[in-house]
View (cartoon, one colour):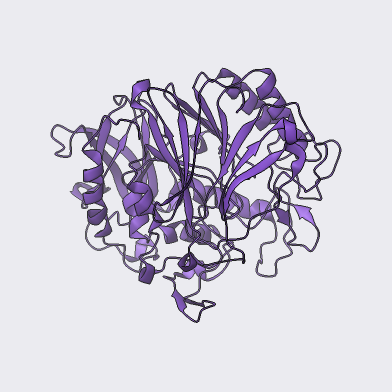
Length: 524
């Protein structure tokens, strides 16, 4: 582990987990705030921070009724001489959620904050403050960087099970004291209803916490909002959010399985068949329930680059909004691909500008793993690889263009991180094994799910020469979290040597696989 400048934080963190677990949820758990108006404003859904920089960060909260958001920050937990930030008025237009940007913060420092919700008619009437903390990005290389990543939460009908302690994986991630959490998509399963009980193959019964919005597929804005609220019923997640900033991207299940722009659904569960309509509602709920800086821009985009000092830039991709329709993906020309022309140009430009030692490409889908889409009965492709090990075709053409660009511009330190496929693995890509050879070797690491069904490993496509160095996956489909196979990954960058170490971990934090990469190389 790299040396850390905040030796007391981990002990503080563990104490705060228990405190956060004692939060009282709003009346009726998923009920509309207007139904619980007695007393003072409450923030039982916890707090979050996101897109933290060297001198700024976004703080999120949800109220149980109309309220003014107020944030106070301090260098210590005592909140002596706090700095006060007046945030937005929280109302029905944003489902009583709101975000306040903190700016002018000291870099590389622990920031303690508390959120107060004030009655709009009487600012003196405030609810109980909800506290949290985060570290701003350090500009000192010697401080190093540590973060965790995963994806896929409450999928395949496996929701919050109190008998198993809920989403326990968040406690294991928090114990590593990460600088931030990268969620690689599928933050919710809007297309996955949650039943009260599910029979397991061994005769046991899985018991879920349930809500009205999770009883069917999400179609209305209220139902999408309810999906995001559902996960916040878990005390482990709320405690984690209060102490670890996030970098969030989305994939398909924030809307519906394997969706693409312009799609018309044939799924009989949906009365609204136009995916573009569903996606617009999902994006609004997504923007309300996560602190993401770019979603507040006029273009409202998810893709962005997050700078973490001299050691790390994180390039967050959006492989959903700009993609073409899912198809056999065997066309000989494909300018739109999975990223779209504009996003590909953006990624090339930002990679060439980056001076960070490591450039992590946060991809919501894997590159060389064949991910099929057979939802309409046709052998379509959902991700990039289509199973033909020859020259690039379809969406592979766009990835080949990007990999060629990285090689010829001699861009060093690129590492790909993803989730999506519900198991953990490490793939090394090398032109000596590939049909397409004009690229430098690189690594792709897969993790997840956080709390969802686990699935067997996907087949590899040889176009870019992947070698699966490590994999842990079940042999049967949709293994419940009670059966294990829940994963997250850790990335630790040493401040002295610049060495980047990836550890693939199980739900309890057990290390399954470790790979250390050396800085300054175009490919390795």
